[in-house]
Amino acid sequence: MPDAPPDVVIVVLDCVRADLFDEELAAGHLPYLASAAPAFVRYPRAVAPASWTIPSHASLFTGRYPWDHGAHYKSGAILGSSPPTLAERLRGRGYRTASISANGYVQPGTGLTRGFDSAVWGGDREFFLRVVADRPSCPVLNGADAAVHAILDRAPTAASWRVGAMRALSRFTPVCDALNRLGGHVRGRSPALVGSWIETEFARAIDAAGSGPAFAFVNLLEAHEPYFADAGLPVALRDWLAFARTTQVSQQWTRGENAPSARDLAWARRDYRSALRVLDGRLRSLSDVLRSRGRWDRALVVITSDHGQAFGEDGHVYHRLRLEEGITRVPLWIKFPGGVGTVAGGGWATLADLPTTVAAAVGAPEPFGDPTTVALTPGGPPVGRLVFAMTDGVSSNEAGTLPPGRRAEIDRVQIAAYGDGRKTVVDQDGAARSWGFDSTPGSAPTTIEVDATAVAEIRPKLEAVLRLPPTTTVSQRIAGWGY
Image (tube, rainbow, N blue to C red; front, side, top):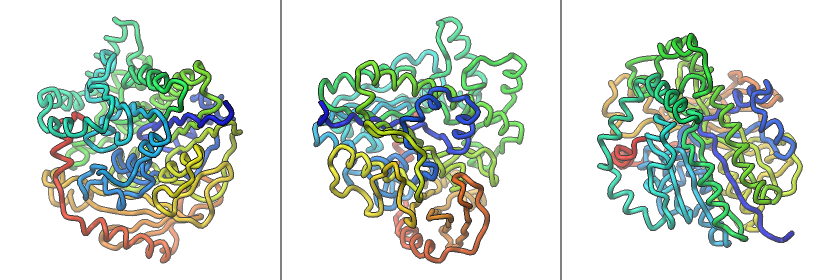
């Protein structure tokens, strides 16, 4: 049926930063992506709208930046009943919509499943005890919107003992790794996958669309800390014993109690690269589902990330609290139906462009999201446009547990603007810095004179966030989710 609307599949590789992704691809360590690249348009200048899961996914789904959609720490970190989401728009056009996420933040309690006909998400068990997590620990919700209040009502107290146990295990990652390896040996299966049920749920979601179009969102979590030795892949005993002596507890680093050593960070980077190889295999499995059902050629497929990951650059570890290049720059690949792949030129792209891009591809070109967003094409985004990224510090509850000096250091709102060959960051105290890039995508920035035009664009957005009253809503809800 040449006039049939395309299926839409968006895959978020959680925590994957663009430069290490590109390095692994160039080194031949991502064989599926290397074979699939000729079908994809790759956008080498792509920016995540936020430095952590909830605000970045909210931008991906609404086409709005965090200061507009409000799903960030300074406003409760919950996506409310507006603005409209991509899933709502597509469902209104006859799509069967499904959210399948290894990341526990993508669920009804955060508002990120609004518009999906079904939703399934992972939790603590899937992440730490991977080899026994054959099924999702949450219910598979059909009619996800209707379940929001039930989830919110039970979230603060649900399985608090289990959440505490899993958080304790996060301090002993080698123990989890050993348990997974032992379980994998006994059960004859790989201990590397976070949420081994994802491919099955993805196939079920595609089949549920029948002869109609499907929209499936998938989040894969292997690249998120804490890391297992070689991401669960085979590892020599000597190397595993070296890994077992590493420290990687993000909560301790946030409180300023324990900073990973250079050796710890080197191991984390090594294990992170192994996680990218695991993700490459999972992408192959997802594409096989579409191919086996004859839906690959007419599908619009997006591969991207919600944010990157830092490994000690500029003194920062992991993500969430800064806007360094390792955190803001993400891979963005799009396979257009019937299209031919290329490396796009032009200016900067943002994940907030994706709703507009999808809407245009399915024949719904009416305005969607921020007025500055565009429908991405093989030719690339327009030159001269600014795209933005925001970091929102920590929640008010978490801030109350930090030593005063540490809180002043990390609980900060910042907004970055990317435009042409420059990047400008404005901090909540008004301080501004600008960096320049040469003409090579992915090049390292150098300090330049502050870009007054970008600063003028950023300041009203920053002030709007800082005027919001403090809220503890997100901390209370997350307490019951075991993320």
